[in-house]
Length: 263
Image 1 (cartoon, rainbow, N blue to C red):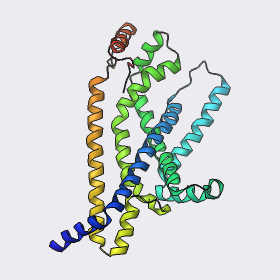
Image 2 (image 1 turned 90 degrees about the vertical axis):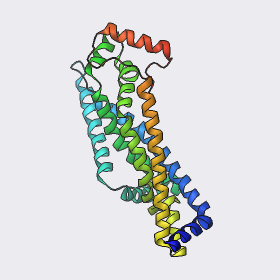
Image 3 (image 1 turned 120 degrees about the vertical axis):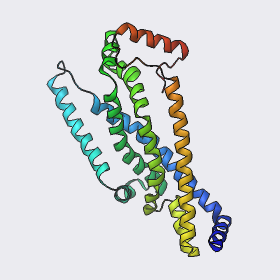
């Protein structure tokens, strides 16, 4: 046990900088990938959640079915295949066309992969908003786009935030598979150190503890953000579909905060 601890301290002293560089790359890929995936998920999930009413033309309905079919294929493909396989395929598929770096490829892969999961999260978040919210907004004269942007999406994001935060934590861990395309993240650095020192147990123990610290800190920060969102967000009660009550809720929030729907 004493030797085990001694080897860990020696590794930290000798390779601490390399491990920190790996942590930086891991967080960079996870943060950018999650944010880009959230934007992609908002677009895809929003499109899939929109339902055309009876006034829509046949051409519009046909176009919507085609778009939904394409998006369903995208979601099914990236949710049904391993990220490691996706990384290898996308990286080598586009390498000769755009000559991108390993880091650029990693960000694109994790963003597209996360977008597929985020699309379902956002779609379920939109569907969880009470239909009375839409009816009240339309009664006030809001258009479909205004209703979606100012009423539905803010509440959907609030409802979906725990799942979005969970995707970020998953991305911190799953970024380790990107070492397959030589991204110098934490797993890549740990494997290199273990191969140089032959201290496999000690090196991977350090790596595991670093991942545990990263995910724990991320969980704490996300819980704080979620708690503040629950305190600061004022919305119409789910059972209240009275347009006048809706207007009062909107006006009250506008007085307290210029961005009344917040997050």
